[in-house]
Image (cartoon, rainbow, N blue to C red):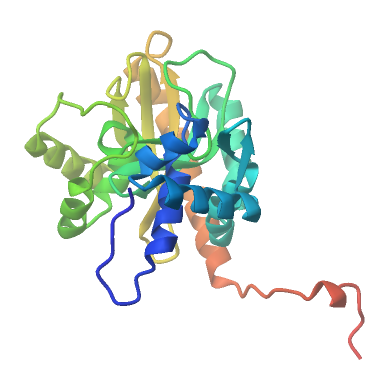
Length: 275
């Protein structure tokens, strides 16, 4: 369930509706009313009203007593990504990076203690974990997550790591909090991060930060390889320089995009000639 606000303007019904949407994931693509109510911690009548409302709005469909999300839910997240202008800028750079390395490349941002994938260009290789737009992983177990965590202030980092992961993966026990802090300090100094089979066996990746116009780390870009095919030495020697250059180019173009005025044009005025 989503965290509950304490302010006088907090809208409980909206929070419950978001709880319902968050119940669905790759392992729960179709759920009954009872399953939704249990997962969201709601009474059946409340869950039913919320599901029917979401169905009327087009975010949920029902078939044979089961409910599924519709593609319309993507508009909730893609509106955010689109507002940043980041994907349009990054896409050709990601495609060129993938063409040069022959490996998949993704971009992710922080959401609590997890990363969420916001862009991806993949190659047809068998890998232990499926990754799509919206996929969520614990930040501390990924190269992109470590880059993003390293960009936080000490207070922000503590608050972020205190939040429970919503990725559904078992806790990682291969590293202590002190070891993680030491690693993040090193990442902050050198400007890139490595995750060597920390997320899943066979998954090895390196990541670099993507910064906005103020220099703040707002996203991370990676190259992911299969550990049995690509050594750490090759990943760092051949692919990391290409990744760093690509991330730098995206950051520079994004910073330029943010300085430009963005004006919405009335569709009825398109093609009209000023008097």
